[in-house]
Length: 388
Image 1: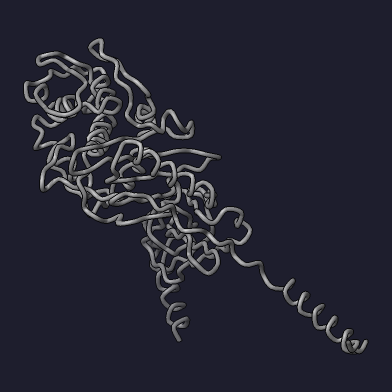
Image 2: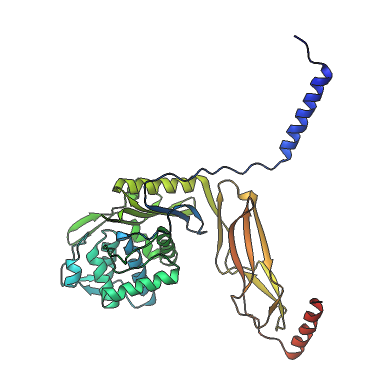
């Protein structure tokens, strides 16, 4: 066996050292995020509550029968009426015969009984009472069909593009449908706007008329981080569930539609939540209404105006990669007075691994009125020179 010359060994060692040095200079490879769990559902979506980023989805825009997930919108509409002062929790509602006769799950409200709005809401949210849904709809709008119009108006306002309601409780109708993405949008809005009422979605049991019923959301017992939201089931819809959970100040919303059993929908939601929390994290980067820069204002009483964000800015990215985020701002230079508070004057973007993971408009933090005639003439001359 021939020995390798010492010079060749030295050369090979040197080349290996150079290779290692070059490898050390290279940026670390981004972490590999595995695909989301394979769950047996017609559709699903997983989003981060704070950033709105979609972390996993399948058929998320498909129009499907929502069953009792409908009651999320029913509750949302009632919450808005409470916020406007058009309704109060202690208002008494008389249960109509229609509400009493409504088939499906019930809170066992008796016809002609007077029940407080708060109890009807809990009966609808915790016990999934169809009778409670109809009673609330009739009390708010006078008629359930009119209430359904209110539901559709709110769906349109929220940008729910694949949703249409025909009733308040989710009984099957060819023109009654929703998508998983739309239900996530709705749930996010409800949690943000009505945290004082959203907390009722974590109630595990509720007693009314001496009948105690438990919340059908199994994850309220399995996972202490879960605090809502709503189950649904009909023969056509299958078993559906919307959940939300908070771990380490990160809230996720999972929507699963069309599984084969109660246990399947719970397991599917749990898998999605675990996936999101395991592989992603969310950070709040900028607060709303705080100055992030200044924009030039031409022909104004002031030559500059502070710019910032109208909403808190959070981004979701692969776990452990915070230091690899890159933020950039673009501020326009051609704004002319008058400038209204909230006018778009630029944008801020956050990228990870050359992918935009968050973006918001930069807006004027205050109004700038037109300047005097001399200011306008002076700036007009400056603009003429700037364009040359």
